[in-house]
Length: 151
Image (cartoon, rainbow, N blue to C red; front, top):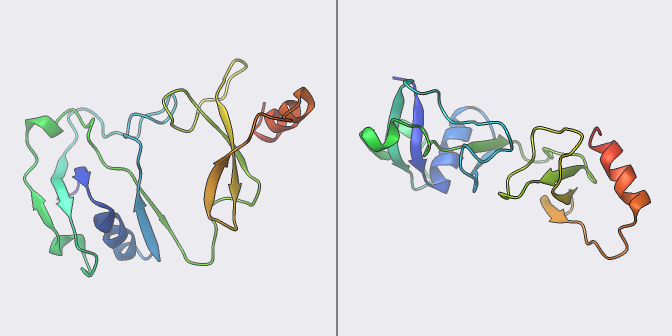
């Protein structure tokens, strides 16, 4: 049956993404509810397929991984796992892309006229987001960054 997964390990994200045809996968470090004003958690009452999905990495399908039956603790979907899938040689973001991280540490998905947070830049060379140092970050630079992010 299909449904969300209430807790998973990094290897489970890798196996799930490879099963879907991607080269790699990674487990989000943020909770499913921690994405700005958006929630990636399953809808209340929707099915939960498994709890604590644990793979070792060599499996060809998540069906080969260990799991527990979902219980009442999973019903709220607050523990739903979020994974990101990608392909080798492709970057999910353009070099120099900017994003705003809100107070909870999650990317700010709802951009409004009074959205605040920490600016991060994506570096293809490291395949990672990096905070922008505030030293030397002028109001002009802030204006350019805000325009690039759609403000």
